[in-house]
Length: 179
Image 1 (spheres, rainbow, N blue to C red):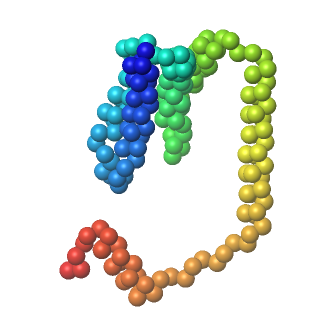
Image 2 (tube, rainbow, N blue to C red):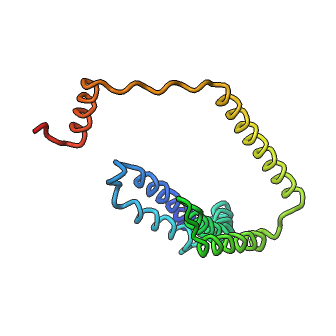
Image 3 (cartoon, rainbow, N blue to C red):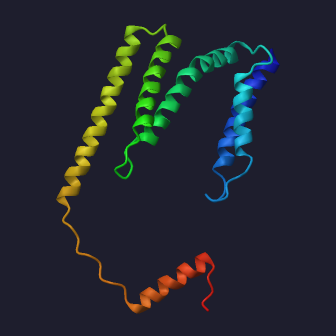
């Protein structure tokens, strides 16, 4: 019993460790081992070698109901983002297949969460409406404030002394000699 619970918590900690390692270091040289920690944590959460305790069994069952529709939805969102118009170029196969996969993930969500009550759906939709109203009002207020601020004059051109100072800073940061 305790081994199953330890395996679930070990999986969570390995996932957290993998995410933390993935964010460590400069952007061009991240930790090399973060992906292995993420995969090991994910596997230890999904593949149960022992039967966990009651609380951890609830977590395990929730993950089993969460992963199918979330992974298909994530794949769909990824395809939609790839197919979205970037620099006026739309990739229709990825865009259309992404939306089909997203619709399929909604179907999977309803299949895995068939015990939804009408009250839960109403509460969730009212929450979404409240979030939408607050985001729209924030965007409207930002637009009003930005339109009231007068445009500034363009900045004057840098002097030769300032240009030389900027060139020195950049060459020092990228390691170029003054020769």
